[in-house]
Image (tube, helix red, strand yellow):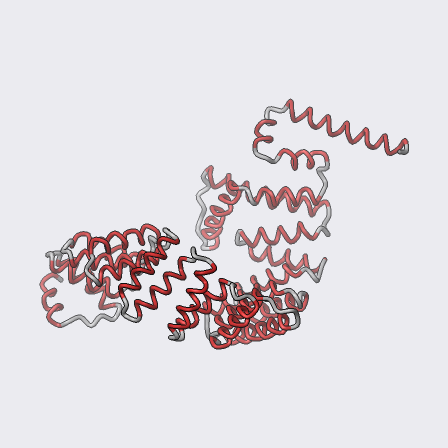
Length: 446
């Protein structure tokens, strides 16, 4: 080893030792060590102008629970600001803003050291987008692409931003660029098509996104056919055709996946779902049963077989499979709901109440479970409980017409006439053609 190298090594060791001594003497040492940030902070103290270290530190902080919570609160603050309202500058608000600013400033410090450091540019853009600073995020994504025009994720995020601004044509151009830069990457096709699916759920008649999705699916088909076929790729194709509404081609894709891997559970399960939608109940049940042989814990497989039996009027078999679904997954809210409905219709009302309540416990925002529970209470003449359950149903779904109607009727029956008038009016607003006799009975209480 040369004399110069020895001198450099010794000097580096001295810096490290001095830094360690500084931290050991510091009152903050224990806190810094405990929070798990000591190594990265030490490296930054040694190399304070290292863009890579500063960026990594910002990324680490973003994932810590306190910073995640700060981001959630900041988003609410940001929404208030965008609505033009003043923000109450309480201590907690100031602390949240300080945390967000600290991360932004870490990235900006990294860029002050090296303005061409693309990871800092991209991660700053991504962070700004996550806190609803979309214009700033947009500008930084463009800077990323100035430095590296082939940065695929930046094109993808730009597409998302364009879509959020309602600029469908520009969004599609950005997504097309993603696919051009990654012509053989199945995952990018799936990500882009997933975004088109999201947009089309919001606006099913959007021609631009509809054509773009169909084109992307055709290209994805070409990509997977150009390589040795895999069950997973064909499963994805089946899912894409399902979203497109081309159910027969979806069935064909799932069957092709199963030709390669007869035990591909996801393909078996989705094939069951499609056959059920198409009214092919025997084929659906067969697919679910095969899936359950591979994975006996597939709760929704039992649930859907139960649903087939219920549609065929076979309550006993349906009940058996709903119970199997619960045995496979005790948190399957829909299984409890369906079991309760079978029990309600067979007048096992106590059991129905228990299972509706369990379903609600697992899925508190299920308006239909609360509505059905209320109906059972009415049958048992537990009117106060029924009204409470109906009110919860309309709180969750204010457009639940039958709940408003039943609220009006039950309220009238128990002498709560003013409430009956109010609930009837709500029902009428939703299109209820109230019987003339009922309207006449309510007239004195208006």
